[in-house]
Amino acid sequence: MVSSPIVSKNHYVYNLYNPMCAKDPPKIRPLFFRTNIMVGEKESTACTTISGSKPFKFEWKKDGGVLKRGVETEKEYSMIMIDPVGLESMGNYSCTVSNKYGSDVVTAKLTVRGKLETINHTCGSMSSYV
Image (tube, rainbow, N blue to C red; front, side):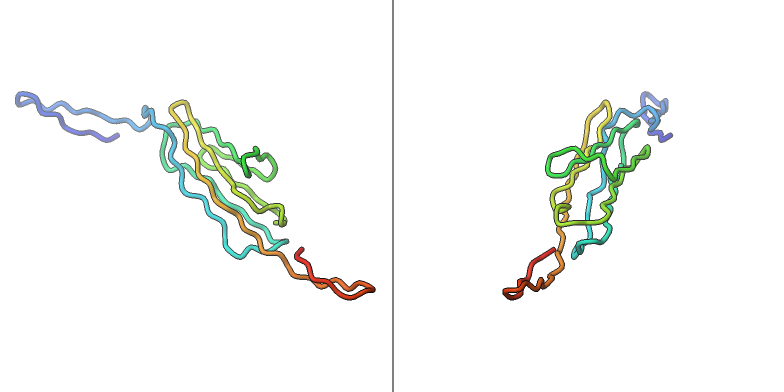
C-alpha cells in the first residue's frame, strides 16, 4: 500500500492507495517480431500487461480476423507461436487486452522472406519464391 499525507489543521490524515482496489484499464507492452524471418522458421511474440486491474481478457487478431490457433494465455500475458512460418503468415498481428474498466491494443507487422528455388522444366528453368 502507498500512502500520502493530507494536512488539515495540524492533523495528518493518510490517504491510503491499495493497488488491489484499483479500477484501472489495462496497459500493455509493444509487440514486435524479429526481422529477416525465413519461411519454415518458428516465430513467437508475447502480449504482456504492465498495469491495470485484473482479470484481463486477451484477444489476438491477424489482419482483422480472430486468431485461435497457436495462442497460449495466462493471467497477465498471452503469446502466439507461428510454427512453421509461411508466406501466408505475413500480416498485421494485434493483441487486445480488456477488463471492465477499458482496453488497450498493440499491433506488429510480421514480414517473411521466401527462399528462392530454381525449378527445372523440360522447356528451361524458372525461379520462384517458396
